[in-house]
Structures are given as C-alpha cells and as structure tokens.
Length: 215
Length: 405
Image 1 (cartoon, each protein chain N blue to C red):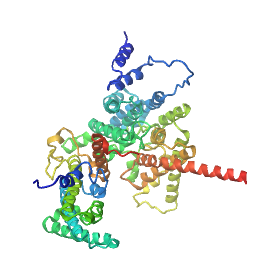
Image 2 (tube, rainbow over the protein chains, first blue to last red; image 1 turned 90 degrees about the vertical axis):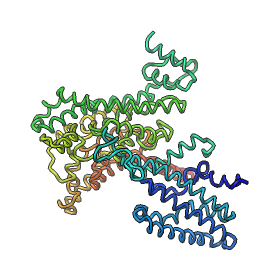
Image 3 (cartoon, one colour; image 1 turned 120 degrees about the vertical axis):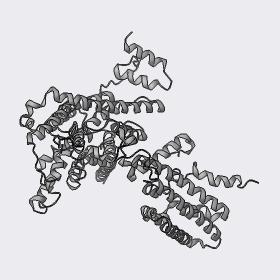
Image 4 (cartoon, one colour; image 1 turned 45 degrees about the vertical axis):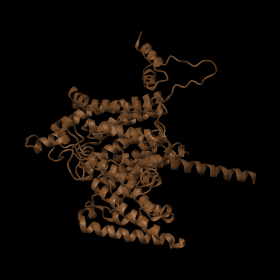
C-alpha cells in the first residue's frame, strides 16, 4: 500500500500550483510583500508558517467536535497565538539576528489569512491526518512563492543570495559590477514584490488558461 | 520593384501567420497601404493614431535639438565658467552639438529600439497589429532622463515600463499610468544615484568625480540643478533669462520653458494637447507657489528651516525651473491617462500643478515632484471623471424634476 492515498497526495500537491494560496487564492499577500527582500528571511518565514499551520491544523481538527461554533474564531485565534509565540521564542533563542530582521512579522503570522482560512475551510471538517497534510501542502505553496520572490528580490536588489555575493562585490567592483552593472534598488521596495508576485500570477495563468476567472 | 512593393509582397506572403503584424506595421508606417475600401460611404479622417503621435513628436523635436546643444554647453560651461558670460555666442557651436550627438542620440536610439522590439514581440504573441503608442513614449523617455544615464539602465527601464506600465493592461489606450513616466519612476527608484544629486545633470561630471577620487588634479564639475541649489539654500547663478530659455542643467529636454511653450502652442493649435490641462496645471503650480510665498512673508517659516529655500522661491519662477513645464505640456496631456471630461481636466491639471510644487518643497529628496504628481493624478483621473459625470447626471435630474413639477 502506498504511503499516501491519491486523495492525500492531492492535499499536498494541489496548493503548490493550481490551488496556490498566494497566486490563486490571493491570501497572505501582506507577508509576501513585507519580508521577501532577503531569501533567508523568506525561507525562515516559510518554515515558521509551515510549523504553525501544520500543528494548528492538527489541533483544530482534534478539537473540531468540542468547539462550540459560536466561539470557534476565538478558539482558533488562541491556538494560532500560542503556536506563534512558541515559534517566536524558538527563533529568538536560536536565530536572534533573523528574528530581528523578521521583527514584527513573526507575530503577525497570527493575522496571516492562509492560517485562519485553512482552519475554517479544512481543519474544522476533516480528520487530523488529512488536516496535517493540508497544512503542510498549503504552507509549502505559500513558502514556494515566498522563496521565488525572495530569490529574485535578493539577487537583483542586493546582488547576493543567502548573503553570498554571487554577482561580485559592488564596492570593489568585481564580477558583474566591473562592467558597470548596478543593483536595482527598486527591488528592495515592497511595491516591486507586488509586481513580482503579479508576474508569477501572469506566467502561471498563461501556462494554464483554465485558471483564468471568467468575468 | 521598390521597397514598397517588396513590403507589400512580404505582407501578402506572411498573411495569417504569426509574423504578419510585424510586416504590416513596417508597411503601414512607411507607406500608404495598397488596400483601399470598396463601395459604400466612408468617413475619411486624417487624424488617425499615427498622425496624432507624429504631431506630438514634431512638437518635441525642438526640445530634443535644444537638449543636444545644452548637453554640450553645460559640459563645457561647467569646466570653464567664463562661457556663461555670453551664452548666445557659446551655445550653438558644433562642439556642443557633438556632445549632444554622442550622448543624447544613443539614448533616443536605445529608447526606440528596445521599446519597439517589446511592442513587436507582444504584437506577434497576441496576434494583433503593432500599436503606435510607443512612438511618443520613445521620444519622451530620452528627454526626461539625465544625460549620463547608462544605456543598459535605460533599456531595462524601457522593458519594464512598456510591459508593466502598458502591455499588462492590454496595450495602447488601456494603460492607467503614463508609460514614459513609469519608465522615469522605475529609473528613479531603482538607480537613485544616477537620477538625482548634483553630479548626473552635466555630461561627464560623474566620471570627473571618480577621477578626482582616484587622485586626478582636474577641477570638479558641479552640475547642481536650480531646484537642488534652492533646496540647499544656495545661491543660484542663473539669470531669469537663462531659466526661461533653458541654458541650465537638467534632464535632456526639460530645461527650455520657451521651446516647451512653443510646442504647447503647436499642440493646442492642432487640437492634440488639451489647453485646459496645460493651463490648469500652471495655475495649480502658481497657486501653491503663492501660498508658500505667503507663508514665508508671514514669517511662519524662517531662514533656519530646510524648506525656506524652495518656499521663498517666487511663484512664477517655480513655473520655469525643474520639469514642471515639460510635464504639464507633454506628460499631463496624454489623452489616455488624463481625465476625459472638460471639468475633470481642470481639476486634474490643477491638482497636478498643486501637488508638484508641494512635493518639490516638502520633500528635498524628490526635488522633481512633477512626475510623481502626474502618476498620482493618472491613478485618480477615472475617479475625477466618474464624479464629474455623476454630478452632471444629478444636475440634469434636478432640472427634469423642476420641469415636470
């Protein structure tokens, strides 16, 4: 027997492309614009959201039959908040510099629409294992876009990747900088992240025209 | 067989294929097509899109030629200040023009080459005719950048501006933002060191600064624009005549208010530019300038303030320095991105002028606030139109009620 049934695999892979939380559902845009100026921050953010979403989905799924529906949003918030505080403390303990770059945005994972959206739409109506897979899949789809955007913004904006000077040194004029290349400062500003996300959406929909909404 | 026949045959040969729009565009751009309409009555109008675009380009040519001379003049005058004593004798020289030819013409060629290439590619992919929209943009772009802008930066910015500023919205006529200003904005935010400061406006100033840093004994060239000097409360060496005629540092084509006004007259005469927008932009700028003058006169702002220099600038001088005149005449009047209703045009233009001077004074980091003001109002133009139309509807309904009552 395969490890995952076909339906379960779909839970993992659908959010990567055809049901991507950022490019198709257009959720979680705020953090995608705010923290993607560096690739490292994007990766850490992706991993943090994955931890919060996967564990949170399982918790909500386990509690789904005991949560009164009138106060379910509050219960969900408490679960996210608790998990986010744990992630924040872990980051502060083991990656202090990074947690400073991410600053308030780790705390703002609470408000990430993807998380509440998955709790509401999936975990409240499904068993823990499937909820776990759904959480991993959606966080991976979110993280994938974050990493793509972070890759281009750091490469073109600062000329580095994960802090390594891949294009040469801009001050000592080595590598590409020797022939007059310069970093694109616009890439470091948030509006450019929106444009990069827009370009990804554009490419995705022109490759798969069934994704285009009818007016 | 002439070129025209060849093109016609090529067009026939590739009809229905992907490359058809490309040949079609070259053919109709250069010649009157062979096809004529048969039967029925047709309205014949001479002012199609190509004619409109060409008229604007004609209005821009004096600015371009002046800009080429000015590029050289500013370069030599920065080295030898005595040239400024007799501007007229030292301006229209071949040496000046030569600098213009080697520095400004490449900007024009890159702007057109890259921009039209992108347009062609999109026309081929989308299978529609090549649109004429880029003809004016391609001429505006080299006129609103500093003369020393590296060519590859211009090329990157043009690709960005044409695709993100225009093609994603559906091409010519569908764009929300003025593509030329989108290109300028991209350059400004992406490569700020090349687009502002006191070095970029005079050809060779950056190079000279680098040489001095490397130990050369040559004199530094300062190319501060008037706006930059005012922002730092410095004395300005240029006379009112210099400012009006444009013998001052600045972007390639924006300096000569005189030639821009000539171009404005031509555009208004041919009914291509809206006089309402041009006039109201100047009025808006003058009003804001007057307000600031009053603020200074009332001693609310004193000399110690960092806003003093630009606030104390006489209001009519604001109209001549910086890119205000160029923006008002050639950019704000873009028929696609401006307001369409007559009342809307007054509001739209007024706010452009008003906000331009406000940005200019309050944000010394962006002494050239005109392009930001126009882009901002581009976004609001449809809203202005909406309320003008709604207001008209309400008024008419009111009148209709009175009559029936």
